[in-house]
Image 1: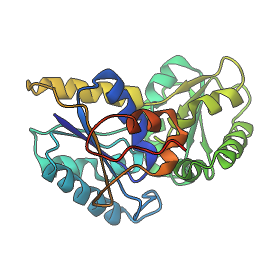
Image 2: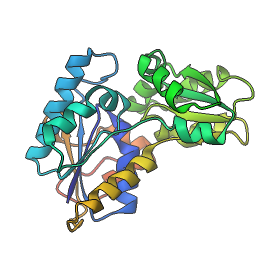
Image 3: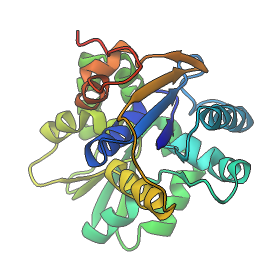
Length: 262
């Protein structure tokens, strides 16, 4: 069974790695978009068209489940993708883990891109799911771009800057960009002891498997990982090898090229 994951850059890696860990026999189809990345600053209709075109390609490649492990794609094009593929093919979106964080913490900071932090989308999520928690948005300037480049020095600087602007006394951090779990260890090393961090990658992978199992089909496969980059057969960018998730997926056997390790 083929599960397709769609994102402009490396944000699909954490969810894909969880799927590989939880169900290693699944065939994963990773569709990124180096030609069009990043999607966040692009006009809404441009993003919708790009995501729909990528979803059509996933269907042509035999995908039986589609995952959008990308906040921009989910908020902009999730319903359009679901309408296009119909009710019989699961499409799973991604939402930042504000609700579980608010249930566990009195004070929360949502770390996200500058565009997401300023968006009506995030404000609506905070209103809907923030409960009684005090929620602050913290824009992580340049962090997602640095992750896509594998630029470890800039990653460290961006994390330190976000940590410095996180209000004193914050009990929980919500990772509001799907790139950020790739540097979770670096984030944890920067935060005060005891501060909790919430991300959605494992939950999205779990929901994907539940929807897959509900299809009643044999969820078997060869455990392959294939990459399609902006519509062309390709490989993950070399920057992926800077992160554990990228190395895990690159080491998987299949008909893709092996991910470089240096």
